[in-house]
Amino acid sequence: MKDVEAILKEVAERLKDNYPYGDPLYAGQMLKPPHDVARRAYEMALKINPNNHALDGGRASSAMEKEAVAALARMIGWADTHLGHLSSGGTMANLEALWIAGQLHPGKTILASTQAHYTHQRIAGVLGLPFETIACDRNGRMDVQALERRLAAGGIGTVVATMGTTATGAVDPLPAIVDLRRRFDFRIHADAAYGGYFILADNLSGETKLAFSCVREAESIVIDPHKHGLQPYGCGCVIFHDPSVGRLYRHDSPYTYFTSTDLHLGEISLECSRPGAAAVALWATQRMFPLEPGGEFAKGLESGRAAALELYSRLRKDGRFVTGTAPALDILVWAPRAKRVSEASTLSQRVFDEAAKRQLHLALATLPVDLIDAQDMQRDRDTIVCLRSVLMKPEHHEWVDRIWSILDDATTAAGVKR
Image 1 (cartoon, rainbow, N blue to C red):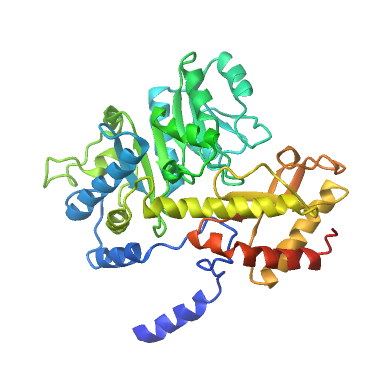
Image 2 (cartoon, rainbow, N blue to C red):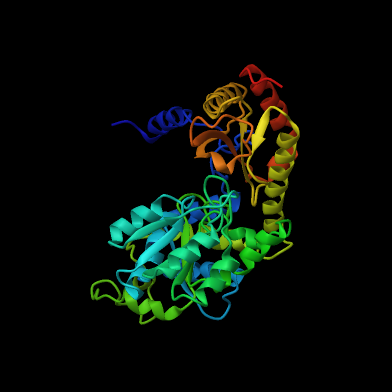
């Protein structure tokens, strides 16, 4: 039998096969290093390995989970009443929100935009609920007029408003959706898995800030602390405004909930075993960085958005590129300028490869051509492969010059002409 040191050396060798996710030159996917306090609190809890399904398996960590979720609810504006818990991530959290929606509006259709996360359609299929998409406007947001027409046709149970789409970071027009709810009977679920924490930021556009101010009007919301919340994977969160939805979770488990008459988190969750360590890490992080406007945590979000705006401005001024609309949060997309859309797509791949050779790691996203300012290109296809950057690390603002320098070199090497 191999000893622990030998195995851990093998692990270390295997882990070398990774991208440098914590480096500011990694600006591709939604990967933000967990804070040191989160890592250390998680490791402390692992010594106990609590299970936050029942109080019997995680008394202290269950209490910390309730406190951490309550802090997120206060951030939204639900200080007095809410019901929520942590989950393995946004997929499971959204599943729970739509499961509750299906229980309250059985058989009715779920609507989401064409830029919403693909898992909503998959979740609806798992739940046996009808699902339809609503077209987006040129900003990648749900088209309100198209939504109104579909609502008028009837049969809608829930509208999913995406508060930060995965591809472009677009924020759906939640104020208009709330207005439509006054005329049509449907639930609003805010999928803020990526963008939820931006409710704290003060450098958003007026339109985006107004949208986040309306999140409190939703019936349910999902936020992923393992995205902007400085947590290790997996840590998602679903919160309902009306605590009475807890009755829909009711089940019998006489062999589980027997040491306390207090509420066990497993009684308001579809998941059973859940890591108490995740709750401990989130609780510790929120103690260090309170969720308040103007605080250190909020300033980190603002820094990432400032970086995205700065890079967007440089791209707009450079004739080699075409861009989407100004970033709503900290994600931006662009493509090399070319005669045809297909050529621009090929050049995007080349720039991506050349940037990676220079240790700048971007991402690629295939988007409808209408989301990019490509009117002067021949439209020989309806989608375009774009370069995509997620500038979610606070350090990114200080690294914009370096990122731009490498991108400039990579673009030249890829054969994109000025």
